[in-house]
Length: 128
Image: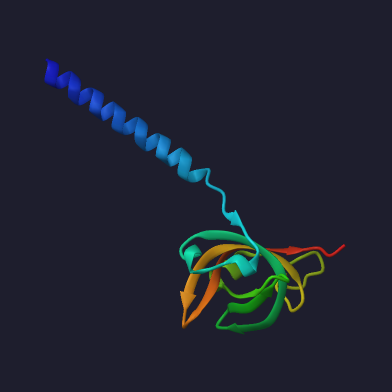
């Protein structure tokens, strides 16, 4: 009987630990950083950045641009799947365009010798 009780306690503890871990992971917020502060130490992490869209190009529905914020610049990739899910702004013009201020949430990656952000959220910021 004692061994059976120990097994039940272990199983209950494991289940509670998994639930706590699930709650903790889902409440982690991306780190807001200046673009100039992004280094290789950020690889694989999700960050929030804000800046101005420059050097915009597209290929097969994917969008590529440089985001500048005064502290630096970084290449941003917005895959077609995210583009397809994004709505147009009030004017009906695509929200990603040259010289638009934008907030990006995405993962820092390294590609062909350069750091870049793979966007999972894009928001155009209205200039006041």
